[in-house]
Amino acid sequence: MPDAFPNHPSYCGLRERFVHAATQAGASLSRYDHPLPGPFGESLSTDVAWLGNPRAERVLVTLSGTHGVEGYYGSDCQSQWLETYGTRELPDDVAILMIHLINPWGTAWMRRVNEDNIDLNRNYIDFTQPLPDNAAYAAIHDVYTCTDLEGPSRAQADARFNALVEEHGWAQLMAIVGAGQYQFADGLFFGGHAPSWSNQTLRQILATHLGSAKVAMTFDLHTGAGEYGHPMLMTIVQSAYPALPDAQSLFGPWLYTLITAANTLSDTGVAATSTGYTSQALLDALPEVQLMPFVIECGTWPGPPMHAQLRADHWLHLHGDPLSEQGQMIKRGLLEQFYPDDSDWQALVGLRTRQIWERALTALIHQDYTPKTPRADLSTSPQE
View 1: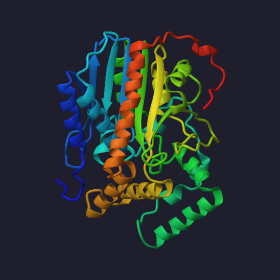
View 2: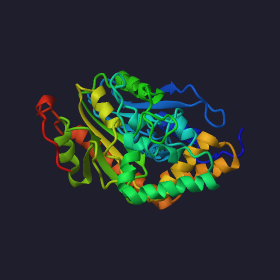
View 3: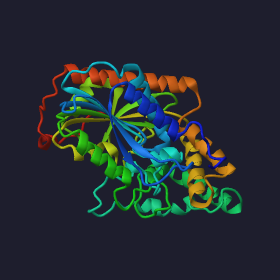
View 4: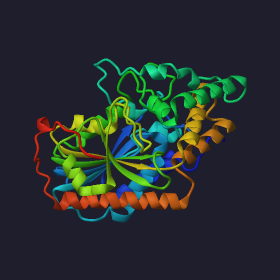
């Protein structure tokens, strides 16, 4: 067992709490085993809890850990909800599906990406088609592959990075980097060359559990973008979808609608230029479901220190030793960026997340979501 790797909080602690809370709530549990172990040699898995009638036609779905280190927030919210509300009686046509840590390797190793350095929110694309080309990233890739964390070569890489910020501006540079890239497996925001284990597992879960669903609301849980302590409710897709008016009506001004496209900037801190988001994958995988795909994005620290910590963690897994004391320092720094050690922050984002879910669940129980507009008739973009 590596003494230097952080052991609190831990993947095992998150999983044990979630499974216990789901069991106490009377949920049906499924487990999807990951092929690789965690830093302590522990087995890893994505766990799924189902509450309610297995053939329910209206389903609330929560998804944690798309970006592994962000799963500490997401798992907390899922377990807290189960512990607080999990034993309530649901109507026969309403159910809850909780997908716990879809990127368990990333959570266990305290990485944003998965075991193949893939950002899952760049991986949900059609790999039978030509891959997106991010030539602008290719021109700056060398900044992210420096072999030293400190010393002359790192100073040179930092000077080049600062020059790029000066040339492009922070927002434009982050739009280039955050757009994702499919050329460099050792680069930042790598989208992969094929569907990842998590990608395939999520699709398997959807096919297994949502076969009877006619209406669904999904919540992909994230941290790192936006103002500190502010949980931002979003819907992030490539184009308008049939249930978008229902989503906007339900949450009103709380909901920020982000339509992604090349050369698009957003003031949310979320990359608007990227492809392969989970939300779009859900829409594509469930074409017969009146689906409202949401994202809850909880703000933490400002962009520059967060990016610096991502660079350090990237270096660690390319050239360093994650099980060293230096690795522990970097891991704790990255965890702080995405899951602040601040009880007020944790309480606030937990409360707001539960409020959002409660409004969604109430709507699923009481509102009529009969499709009103055929998918093919949607030709205009929604208002933000």
